[in-house]
Amino acid sequence: MKTRVILLGTGNPNPDPRHQGCALLILVGERPYVVDFGTGLIRQAAALTPEYGGPLEELDIANLKTAFLTHLHSDHTIGYPDLILTPWVMGREAPLDVYGPEGIVEMTERVLEAYRPDIYYRVYGLEPTNDQGWRVNAHVIAEGEIYADEFVSVEAFLVRHGSWPNAYGFRFTTPDKTIVISGDTAPCENVLRYAQGADILIHDVYCKRTFDERDAIWQQYHSTHHTSTCELAEIAASARPGLLILYHTLFWGASEQELLAEIAQGYDGPVVVGEDLQIYE
Image 1 (cartoon, one colour):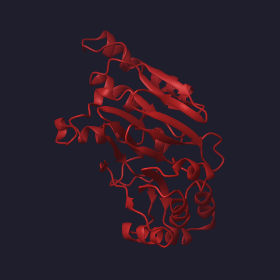
Image 2: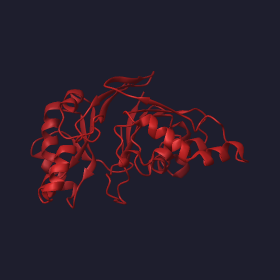
Image 3: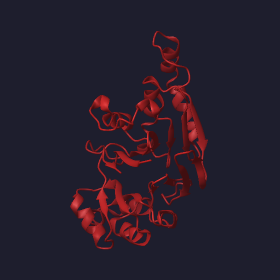
């Protein structure tokens, strides 16, 4: 059974039109698993389906039923209503299962309350819509295995994202791949531990040169919330993943080549700068 990593959005809070909000899919055979809910995630996923000229016959928007959230920052959650409602409108007949940190239950309740008139109209109006696909089972996670089925096991681990008390990374183990997603984090021992020998490590990053040009306030923020190219090179050199994918990338005017050159100063393994709608097999 083939596992693919699909980057739906590789951006960050900056409204860069070339990079949608951070979101990705782990596609195991025909079973998709969503990680993070950035801007545009459903339309990005739809762009990869044959209906809209994409290559993935296995991908069906109505089949987005299982999702995982690293933390509650807005750039990771602003697409949550889209994930709840659009696949339902497109035919999802079962509730969405969401696994996320403390606060996910309250967020889910408030999103559903905000869209209550829309849900009521679609269920009881002329539109032939089912009464199950809009519903959400929200699960609060802790460290350890948080999900398993016949296709995948998912482990959550705490990461260091400023003073967030419950920001997580994930390790997906499928029949043919081990994939680690850092979430947003400063250098973190848990990432190094869970990424050892992974087939793919997807990690947030910022350019060290352009970071050095920012003012002290932003330097303090980013150094405690995210990981520089130089720091990530050290992590990768120790973990030795089969492929390192740069994600949630903060360029601040740097080029992709510059980021790769900074990584290469401390790490000689395979590295790519993640781009929206890239598929890694």
